[in-house]
Image 1 (tube, protein in one colour):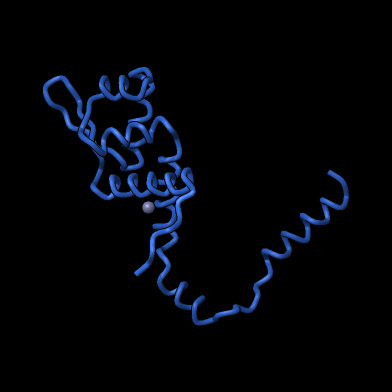
Image 2: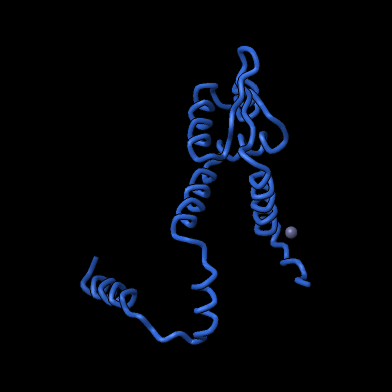
Length: 139
Ligand SMILES: [Zn+2]
């Protein structure tokens, strides 16, 4: 990296420390008053982080349709049962899936119905990007 790039980086970090006057103070005040707490934002970030993996998304897709055991999830996802178990543990730690035992089989399902909606909306969004579809008319 040459000296010009270095000085650019230095300028940039000074810029982020600077507190500018808002263009629309009312809008900024409204945003500050209604924003979710830092704790909630951290949980949302952790949720998106847990969603940010193709295998975990396939698992969640399956579970958004119906509860499922590890064997059937592994067949659907096209991964080993141990790999799917590992991902299910991560999803359970992040409160995205729950499990229940029936005899010797453990069934997994989504933690709540919001996740199915979240998944569907993310899929719609991706479809808009993929097919270059315009936004819907807001009413
Ligand atoms: Zn749409």
